[in-house]
Image (tube, rainbow, N blue to C red):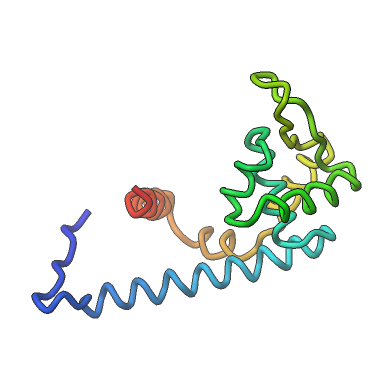
Length: 147
């Protein structure tokens, strides 16, 4: 990997850095648009789809869900209520602390989340045009940016 381009002495980003930032912004905007469309195809809001995706990784208490989604716990309660009514999540006692309730994706919730992921078109199509080495380099660069 090439060495990073130094920041000019006036502390302003160079033209390449600005272009990369613009491109990242465009990628994020397109991904969100595609994600919202895919969620709607599954009769979900974007927030419901994101919450369901998080729960497919692990059961989480409401407070942690709110932190991950960057919203108020009361909003998470409403989202979980709607997903629970559809049979996509359920509340269970936390085995580590029975006083705490965790939200858990049901088998149907995991199926819907998998179908939603598979229906995302934006990233899949351009990434298919990259070689495996290019995809690995992109993945590694993104991981590096996220620290």
